[in-house]
Image (tube, rainbow, N blue to C red; front, side, top):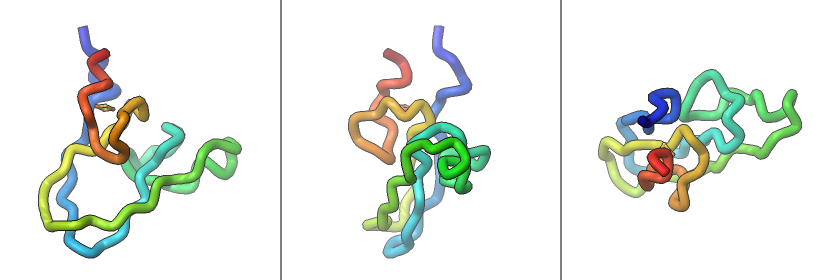
Length: 76
Ligand code: FES
């Protein structure tokens, strides 16, 4: 049985735009960073630039091997 808390979130990425993907799980703005890692002394966000405008499924379980994208690890 999968835990829906850790399902990936579909987001519309815009080519050339930069995003901060939460890598620590503390953010309440998943899948993006809201600065909560600072107070929690946790890992900083992964900043990435979208290569194309498209819908992408971003990982929320933080176990993905291809951050920031979901690779199905949340099922394992
Ligand atoms: S949500 Fe799918 S690998 Fe993390």
